[in-house]
Amino acid sequence: MGESYGAWLLGQDEALLQHITSANIACGLHAGDPVIMQRTVRLALQNGVAIGAHPGFPDLQGFGRRNMTMTPEEIYAMVLYQIGALKAIATAEGGTVKHVKPHGALYNMAAKDRKMADAIARATAKAGANLILYGLSGSELIAAGQAAGLRVLSEVFADRSYQDDGTLTPRGQSGAMIETVEQSVAQALMMAKEQTVMALSGKKIALQSETLCLHGDGEHALAFAVAIRSAFEKAGIVMRAP
Image (cartoon, rainbow, N blue to C red; front, side, top):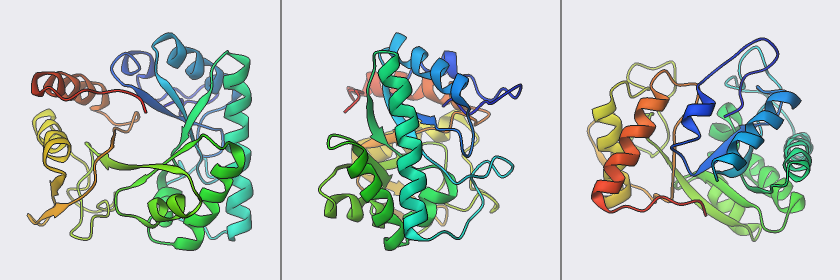
């Protein structure tokens, strides 16, 4: 959420925030700006939505979805900087930052690279003892968070397909994005109820499902959120912020 900046508007944040329980708010490097961060925090508080920092690579042109080479110390400082910025705004608005969820390429690289994951976990731990770290289910980021003594939540996706190893299908590959409400709802229910997902290849893989992600910039984000929430309620699945 909060990925607009300047005159550029992205997503349907105001409507989407009425259907979710937690928001990952961009912190100004891959997207967002101070005014948008403030506005998104206010909207989250008005809707009772938990606030999370969404740090990404400093890459506005690439929307944080291009791999960058950075040292662990650079990643540590970059993540700490972004969490701190959102924490200051949240505090000024009478709220608190509850969790940290890296964005885009930073997230996907840290899912496999333990040194990167450790840097993110260390920054999260230094930014606040009670912060929760979100990471791809079964990834190095989850392991790094646990090693750093953080509470971690294993994240799954309702708008992305999976590879056989449990990673997300790269965006440039055919079939990476889920395009229909029916498919998104079916995948979300399967992950929530069975703790499994059907990979793009057709192989069923196990995963731990504790928090479900939708990308706010996605074309179908609002329709997916409304349909998934309704399907979960009918299935007796309770959605709540951690």
